[in-house]
Amino acid sequence: MAKSKTKRAKPKKHHAAVEPMLEFGNRWDYSPAPESTPVPLKKRYSLYIGGKFVAAKSGRVFRSVNPATGRKLTDIAAGDREDVDLAVKAARKALTGPWGKMPAAERGKLIYRIARMVQERSRELAILETMDGGKPIKESRDVDLPLVAAHFFYHAGWADKLEYAFPGKKPQPIGVCGQVIPWNFPLMMAAWKLAPALACGNTVVLKPAETTSVTALHLAEIIADAGLPDGVVNIVTGKGSTGAAVVQHPGVDKVAFTGSTRVGKQIAAATAASSKRLTLELGGKAANILFDDAPLDQAIEGIINGIYFNQGHVCCAGSRLLVQESVYEQVIHKLSDRIKTLRVGDPLDKNTDIGAINSKAQLTRISELVDSGVAEGAQLHQSGCKLPGEGYWFKPSFFTGVTASHRIAREEIFGPVLSVMTFRTPGEAIERANNTCYGLSAGVWTDKGSKIFKIAAELKAGVIWANTYNKFDPASPFGGYKESGFGREGGLQGLASYVDIS
Ligand code: TAP
Image (cartoon, rainbow, N blue to C red; front, side, top):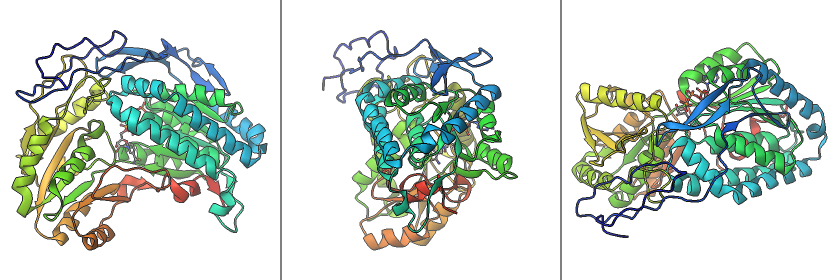
């Protein structure tokens, strides 16, 4: 560590030119540590269909922007209905051809190979993820990429053991899976979708999010290099209409969607009159419940991780904090102190805690919801950090004086903004936590194991963390209640969504 007076080195040229920017007053600051490994970013990316990288039939491309600078990063092929049709046909051919005939153990070996190749290339993939999506390099390097590899490793192991997973059944692949994913964990969401589908012998047409398609196309290279037969995995980049074309294609047997509840509802309606299987992983408004007997300093770290981690672009972010009244003042004091120390800035700097907001549209949405909180009478507290002059940024923030009827207590903000409320009794905490249309995740902070079990049993959330937050494991099922969706990803329950055991 060096004192903040130290002259800062300029970041290397090929990375985001964002000034390191937190003002700490008399505090100690870190010297800049920008990631400098060169990455194979291409000027133009193609679709991956039938084992080949091809331009969109229309010849159109769209721009992918580096959110830390607001400047163009690369051009990406804009696939449409015609490209989706070719991808579905390629997936069908692979299903009835080499992939369908391949012994399960061989299939497993190929998935293991993908996992190992992801590990080998994890540095470059992490940098590309950060440049394209804006998340801090320490998140993409230390959280996303290890989880991507872990998902492929875990599911590779299941490929030839499906009969043990579903005893007494003869599990068969469902067929061609149409998978549509969001921008907050681009490669991780691709792994969550692809790994179980492949392990169960399906073929796939994947549509990444428009703002973060780059790493899925690098994963396509890995899949090709790993030797998967042509057409087993097809990646069609494009806009929302491209996702709709995947979902609506009559040749798709199963749809797996992760994204907003709004689009999830449209997809549920679009598939309702068909025989397509459907799983939906949607939005959330998780409550972190903090009891007065919890170790407060540890809890504050977990709460910070739960909401500011990845700029709050996390479906399961602990965006509502319910604090027991007796420790409210103490908690607010500690929270204010801690957010002042969060480093916001160049996502490629290894010391950055909070990177760039993924897109201008998302920044507008966060700002609009925060303005609504102020207009409805809640008190806004923000870090005093200085934001970079270009790109999309939002200061780590929290609201006090929030009531259950405020929009900031009800709607998913999907940014680094926490809404703090209080409770007196465990019963009131449960009632407040469940008072939402969502049910993806929740957190409980207390010294008492018995209280954890009692509260967890009554919370209507798919994942509940106790004295920790945002811990993921491919062996643990993940998914929601209510408007957070249905179906699970990960574990045995996740496999069940990709096999026919009728
Ligand atoms: P959405 O706007 O719903 O987009 C998700 C994906 O769907 C994108 O690839 C999008 O393409 C595509 N899409 C848009 N309209 C479509 C349509 N009519 N039919 C088919 N596909 C369509 O969500 P987002 O803003 O990218 O992601 C944030 C949301 O995802 C949040 O609500 C978050 O909670 C949720 N999320 C949930 C989970 C889990 S596991 N529950 C995990 C991560 C994120 P474009 O990118 O081109 O618009």
